[in-house]
Amino acid sequence: MNKPANEAFNYNADRLEDVADRISEVLQCPITIEDINHRLLAYSTHDDCTDPARISTIIGRRVPEKVINSLWRDGTIPMLLQTDEPIRVKNIDEVGLGNRIAISIWKNNEVLGFIWALEINKKLTDDELDLLKKAAQVVKNKLLNLHNRKSKKEERNQEFFWKLLTGHIHEENDIINGFHDIGITPPAQHSVVLFRFSDEIKEPTEKQINYLLQTTQQVQIILSTLDQNELIILLAPKSGEPLSDIKQFVDWTILQLKERFMIDDVKAGIGSIYKETEQIELSYKEAIAVQNIKKRFVDETKGLISFSELGIYQYLDLLHEKRKQEGFVNYPLRKLKEYDEMHHTNLVETLEVYLDKDSNVNDAAKALNVHVNTLSYRIKRISQIAELDLRDPNQKITVYLNLKLDKMSL
Image (cartoon, rainbow, N blue to C red; front, side, top):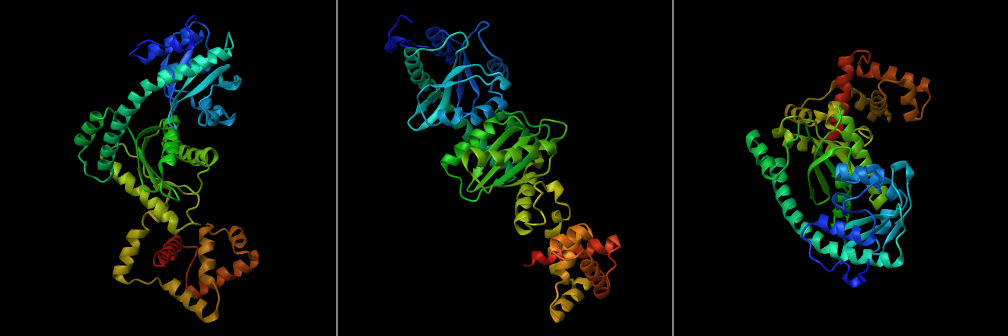
């Protein structure tokens, strides 16, 4: 601390860990250095002067997700993304975070990372805060080299990912070797998730998306890429309930895009979960199918986001093609349509709503805004006119499929 501010970091150090130790020595407090996505890059040695959040960060090599969420809620991270001045962060006991100072590391208008200085046994003075700003400039040069190497690696990863998605690599051995070539362990099980945005994804949004993917700890993000207004992710679940893991991640991502970055109207589709790496292309096609089906059947599929949940909607394209080729017309529906046209009724709509509600008269009556007795009468007339036995599962499923297939022709 005897050196003036402009000389305190006037030395050469190849390792970022040595820089962290030097900052700690100058400021007399523990230091951690993170990238923009809160992954730990370096930390100073420390004695007992630390807190649980710092220990968890060092052990996990990244800031725990609960800590990141707390720092968003209390406004710390939004402030760090707007200023290059040091910010004093008060303790957050529920996530084990003690008092600390944080400062962003900037290059032009882009944040590269952060320095965190713990204030457990002392409070930094104004002069020491100036030294911290000087330290951020020193760290910036180190992070620029890391940033350039990372960009080249991401290009290789995305090229490999697109080959997987498009089936240009489809042999298991070639796929496994490809993963090893880019330094990634092939996943034990995987799924492709497709997020569709209302507008083309521009650079600011791309950075926000990347931030969410890098900081989530709900699933393992293996590879990701962007295509106009689509975000495509290959991920691996972490628990024994893989579909629940993925759905929670999807819900969380959509919520965070809205709450943190004001990005709304994002739709998601989840491909099936497979163990074979050669099925990555198939999972991607299924994720696309989910998006397309949800767009066509908005009300019916409102609560469905995974291919495995689509039920009969998985097969509508195939059945529609078969029906077009053969010219098949469903007899009960033809009779109902003729009756509706002749008498200006809406029995076809009534039947569809009734079947959508799993033959529950009360729910269907509410959806149609009619009395239960009125609906019961209509169902009886539908059975008579269409010569349809709605107590027969086979007849009921068949007419339901054909109701949906009719919409494919619209």
